[in-house]
Length: 110
Image (cartoon, rainbow, N blue to C red):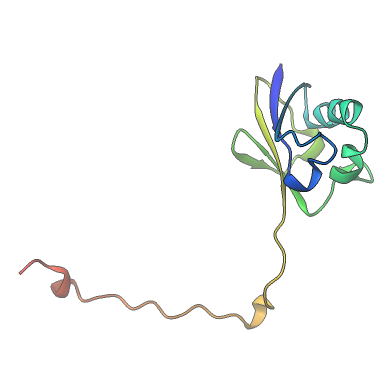
């Protein structure tokens, strides 16, 4: 199975700037091992202690998987390693602006 792997911009220095790389593998762990064979150092950026780093999500065919390295790949797949976005304010003090619903009569054509 040949998979299309999208490389995060932060790691493209290891792939010579390649955004998408085609690799084989039966699961995400095998895909990362093949990436590391071709682009040494990429596994260390994506994984730690035998797991996908906590701030990286793995998407297979558009679905975020919680299985990490164990996620099986049964057909040619598209794989994305998605770094988490950080920053902002403390969400415990954050409040949504109230939603104001318009009166239905006001939306009716005149």
